[in-house]
Image (cartoon, rainbow, N blue to C red):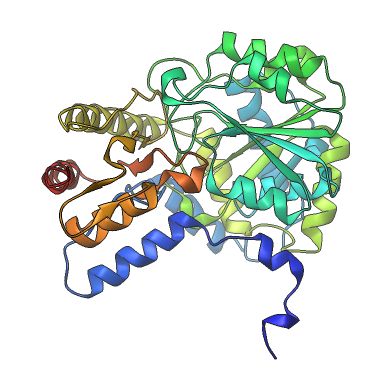
Length: 399
């Protein structure tokens, strides 16, 4: 057997850059180096105790069997209430679909919506997996780039110009991974009016970072009455509740689309873990104090990082309003050398920073913007302060 036996589809898929950098960081750490990892999109907090206790109780009560593919009824009911309470989204049970993480929800949606040759408009910078999920399904990614000067926000005129007769789907995240950008209600409304004029265009709104926002109330693009039939709203438990390993995502969508996604998932993973769903229902309907405390910790860390990065000559950054990332522009270092190494692009920047200063980040090219790097500040204050010191010292040698 050889690579000739692999499907053509495999050649379209890249390894996740965030996972690759995390693995490289582990390898360098295993060599005895003190690596500070700022590469993974994972809260460094533990799952709150009341959620873990709910899972233990669920196990004791026998929630160890297969679940209905669309989701356990108790969790589905909690999702319906959560969407109504927090997002002004009104769904029935047949419009809800539970998956093994928000990533699977997005993969289900792309498989259900995209035919070969269909164009998918991706607000750029984008989460690393959007591009590959589109190409894996035969779609054509159309990357709509918004730069630092625009706070990484796509404008309605940009969107209108990008739409063609082949456009099928628009996908974006707010708050955004990797930039932390969050669209306001007014900005979403203006984008929604463009989409509303194209009735064959569908939106996948990735809202996994909803609870980690710093300045204003999160708004769902699907909450505008005229958009409800053109939007699938994706969310999950990983970020807002520090439940990454529980593998629970969910979405609300028109019934025809939710049913299609259920049919796809029935042939891939079937239903998500029973006790994880019961614990997730408890999380959505119980005390949100731990989530708010985590958000405030991230807010303080963001201020720490912004202040430290602005003290490093050559690095430019905005002030993100959500998530736990900063996406600074490091292009002023391209072409510079320390006499031993030369930084030619964001990949060089990230890899040299890891190998020489033992700070793990992710190259912006993985997110569609080769001028930047992604820094996750899901780490302790001490680690962040030390990482900033190492970055400044490392870059001081390049000229």
